[in-house]
Structures are given as C-alpha cells and as structure tokens.
Length: 365
Image (cartoon, rainbow, N blue to C red; front, side, top):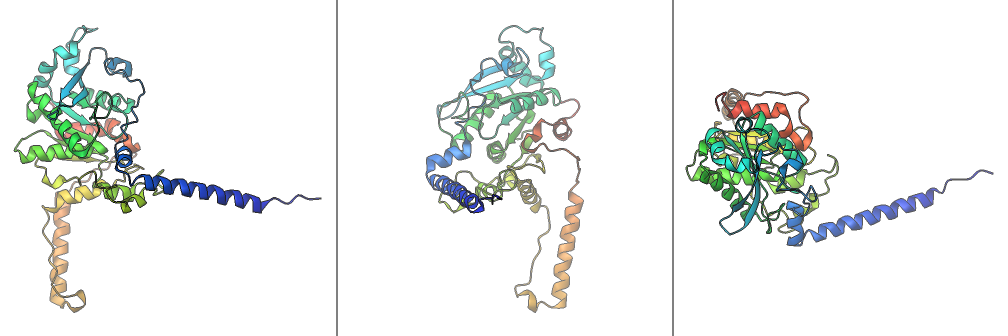
C-alpha cells in the first residue's frame, strides 16, 4: 500500500504562513504612520552597537593606546555629544611609546595645526565604536595621515537626546566649531559622511559654502539623493522592496531634506559600491547628474508637439543633444576600479582611501 503525500495540508500550512507574514508586514507599515516609529526606523539609534561600548577606552575597540581622545562637545541648543579625536600617524609616531595617559588630549592643538583633519559623520544605527567605523578611522589616520573627529549624534552612543534632522545639523556645526576652536584651519578640514551621515555632511557643507567658508572638500560615501527615492529603491538582500508602501504614509518620508550637492562650492567626491544592497548606486548617479547639470548646455524644445516639428526643428534639437553629450564627455573622466565595493563598507577599502588621498591630499598635506 502506497502513502500519498498530503499536498492539501502542505498548501494549507503555506497559505497560513504567508497570511501571518502578510499581517505582520501590514502591521509594521501601519506602525510607521506613527512619528515615533518613523524616527526610530530612520535613525535606528536604539541599536547602540557595540553593546557596552567603552568610549573612554578606545583601545578596547582596536585603536592604538593613547592615540584617541574621548571628548565632549557642547551644541548651540545645550546638548552634549560624545566624540573621539584620533591623532594622525605622524603626530602619534612623534610621541614616546607607550604614550602617557591623556596624551591625545594634550596634542590636539598641535595635531590640527600640523595635519589635515577628517570630520566624520556616521550612518544610522550603532555608535562611533562600531568595528567597521574604527577601521575607517585607522585608514584615514594612516593612508591619509589625517586626524579624525568622529561624533555620535544626539541620541546615539553616549550622547543623550532625540535625533531630528535639525538636531543633527546642530550637532554637525558644533563639531565643526569645536575643531576651529582648537586651532584648525577650515582649508585643512575634509568633511566625510557615510549613508545617513551624507545628509548631515552635505547640509553642513552647504551651510558653510553659503557662509563663504572655504574648506578642503566633501566626501559622500553611499549617499542617497532623497529619502523618498531611497525608500523606492531599498531592497532587502537586493531583491525584496519591503519599504515601498511607506511612501504612501503621510510624513513617513518627510524627515530628511534632499541632498543639494549642486549648492556646494568645494571639491566633492561621491563614493558608492555597485553591490550596495541597502542604498543603490543609482543614488550617486542622480547626485552626480545634479552636480553636472549647471555645466551642460541646455536643450530647448519647440513649443509644439513633436509630431508637428519641422525637419529644421528636429535637426536643431538633435544638434543640441549632440553638443550636450560632447560637453559631458569632455568634463567627465571615468576611472573604473574593478572588483571593489564591499557593499556598505566601501570606505574601509584601501583602494577607496587612496582615491580620497589622491583627490584631496597633496604629498605635503
């Protein structure tokens, strides 16, 4: 006697499973209509990774002993930010080893006077002590031979408060002002943002540019052109567009302004991995096109519909397109670095750090 598989029972269990997943997903989308949940999904600041971080002992997270100062920065609206100031290798190597306690704190003014400084703004979730971010600092202090100031925004790490777009902007400006107060020259400061931090970095850069401040430049790693387009293109494992319905919820995507790179008046570098599953590299393509637009000749179309265009109008329109394409080709130099990417960790790669060095740092700087 043969036993037939119970296909009906299997299909019933599958239907129930998909129904449960559907209800859970619908419930999550409904929760996102609540501003409190929107904020936590956007910033993920409750994920204070690594757990039990030792901000006052950076050596426990992989940095050299005495190389990092654990500091506090006061914002204009009286928030206190936790931050690390990390000495460049040149300054650190001039210290006796092992360096005395608080060596980094004692050499901050010397460091910003003698070496450039990277002002770094991290992405959402976790803290400045996250291992991937520590690898970034190590690369910047060695390959770029620059100091690094890395802050935790309000609500992140050991910085109390609740993150908001305007609040993070105040945090960024406070970090900038702190560097200037230590004696840093604006021309020696490179502003670097990653993921969510690209919105923070670009807003600070635009504000400084509009104030007439000339600084070294801006680097945006894995940027997004706007939160709306980020939600449209966000896919789990690069396949499932689970966040797409959120754009239908009022205010759910209204918490961050679009990145306005075209307002910047300093050198800017966009870095993006083609295999980034979280933030598609098409965002950097859109930002690059926005940067380039003001340098390209416009294309004017006759007012009538295309069906009524004369041969001369078609020829003039085509000539404008050719001129625009040729101008773009003359302005853009494309360099392909094969097999580089590593998804959202693009900034940790030595090849990428070398691009930053060549772009912004002369052999003497």
